[in-house]
Image (cartoon, rainbow, N blue to C red; front, side, top):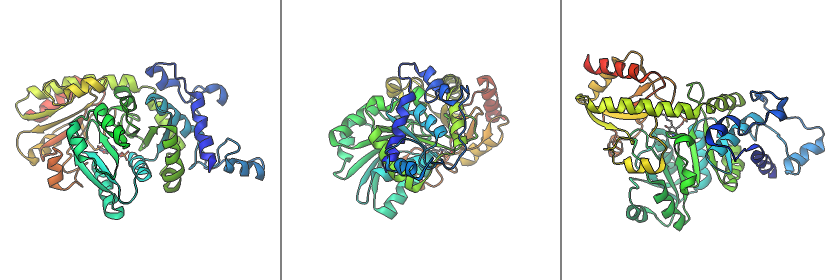
Length: 406
Ligand code: LCS
């Protein structure tokens, strides 16, 4: 079993901690000298690794000799990605998974057991909500969804059996923010682990570990990939926590990432900073135009001065990212008719891609959430979520405008 630790510890070697973020997105986790000076990182498309002798295999399994064994337990291309994301989040170690939900479930199943309680932001991705329900029904792990917007409320909500505070910030799809420093300060006093889903921000815009949180996870399907061609998840944290997840829920449930998908994500990460800057600046322009339009009744964007999350955005985010949610005057059919009139903008779930995508949370990403809870999360029938892409913002706005005015 020690072998998993030996493989994970190899990770720290190639980190170039002295560099700035933009440099780390390109170099960390990969050392060309160890790979025939290949500029691009190689794809180790293999399921298993040979041992020179039976005794060498025994030593590897016993953790007495470093090296790879089998790709579910570790793969060099996947490891490069794990090292890079750990470096970008300023974490000791990272792990890659076959989807964001594989990452969420591996983390939660590792941290909780029957009888425990999870405190959760009032609003999470629909399948995360589904997982919380499943944990409750099958394993009696209870949860509460709360706004988590004051120390008093947080302290009141913590129970003796609360083991995890699980946060999305910005929350999908209402884009409300949670004060990470406030939550982690309260949690630390009580010995509770804070897990943050950092999918909407990426480490370029927000690094929760620097605010005292314990574990950060991502649906890497989104901004980290950005090309709409990979489904993946990432987790980072302290070495001890990451080793524990690697040895338990990752190894034995097995939701690992393929080497080729890891390679695509390594490639995507190289352009993360310039993409996030463009997503954010495009979104700002679209947000301003939406706010002025009479058919739009409500615009949700943390970087908007009128937003109740504005102060938190200034404190913990570099900029507010590429997602905007808004409500349209009328009812569900009016929102759907608006979406149907769009030409360039594609109707699709997922987000963070180069293409601008639009979706209707009440009937799509959050359709599994019962109506009463959905409305409490702030997801009305007319709410629309826009993932502002990398196109010229004027073209994105012209498409929205013609669909609003036709
Ligand atoms: N966390 C967040 C915040 C998400 O938005 C998603 C997926 C996940 C986790 C799960 O990641 P996956 O397994 O899909 O890689 N969000 C989606 C969305 O908003 N539209 O389609 C998927």
